[in-house]
Structures are given as structure tokens and as C-alpha cells.
Length: 114
Length: 109
Image (tube, each protein chain N blue to C red):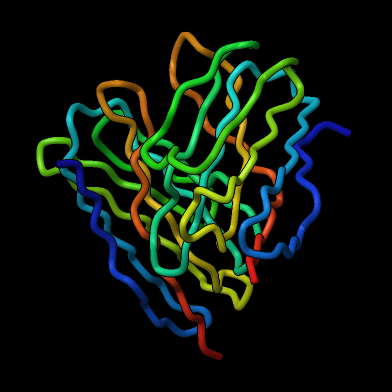
């Protein structure tokens, strides 16, 4: 059963704590993305990775970090440096790198920082 | 800067037709996507246009005019399950996706 899993669906953390959101895919897609979604706003790109062991900053990378040690996994760490971390986080994958393809999304993680 | 405009919210009646517009100003153009997103869920792919014209897929159609920087999503025979947000996204010259804020569509019986 192919797909993208993100866990947990809801996550609560105290202010000042780092937290890592997981994203796993078994679609054998090369590219993976992390987006943040806030109410009334479009998706904003945090980080993306087109191949293993390589990733690039998106538009709002400050306060976040990622790793891509294997093709299937692209975890996102929300650090204490992120000033407003409460948001809905979406992980996405894309099949090819030679031309643009549609992105497939995981179910998302809603992070609330108390 | 890059900009995508969509109406914030629209209301329509079950069984009717609704058109959701999207205008864009981006650095280059390599295609336009429409996604559907139900509240609290992930976006799901609806359509992709890269050439001018109308693409029809069942009850949903998407239109593109590159010269006008304009697209619309047309939903026919509206059903209650069509209540969702509809996101327009443009692929720019760097093959990055630029997302609009989305249009929340409310369907009334």
C-alpha cells in the first residue's frame, strides 16, 4: 500500500523545546518537500530535497532543520529558534526530476506549541 | 515579486455550477496546478494545465490563458462533498511551486 505517512497527526510541545516531525514514503519518489500552512495563507516551502544527502532551503527555512539520509525519509525538526511554530505541516513527494510532476501529500501534522 | 490571487471564499448551491478564478504574476511559467483540500486534510491533485485551453475531467474542468496570466476551475453539478478549499499553484521558471492562499468553497443545500 503505497503512500506517505506523517506522524503524529497532532503534536503538542512546550515553548522552547525542539520537536521532530516524521515523513516516510514508499512511493520511490526522488524529491521530498516540507510545507507549512497557516490559516488564510497558501502553502509555504520550508525545505526540499531532490536526492539523498542533499537538501535546499525554501522560503521560510529559519528555525527549521532537515536531513535526508535515506530516500524514504525526510524528517523536519522545528527548533526553539522558530518564533511562531504553531501550524499545520505538510510533507510532499514528487516522482521525477527531469520535468515537473504533481506533488503527493501526506496527511499532515498539526503542531501546537503551548 | 511573485503573486497568485484567488477569491478567499465562495458560496454555491448544491447541483449548481461554480467557477473559481486564479490570476498569477510569476517569474516564468511552467504549468499550473489545481488542488482540492478538505479541512484538516492533505491537498489532493485535481488538474494540471501547461497549454492554453480547457481540460475536462468529469465534473471538474480547468482553463488556462497564459497571455492573460489567468486560470479557472469549473465545478459542475455541485455536491455537498465539494465543500473544500481549492488551491491554485504555478510552477515558475526555477521549477518551484508558488501557491495561492486558496478559495474556500461552501456548498449550501
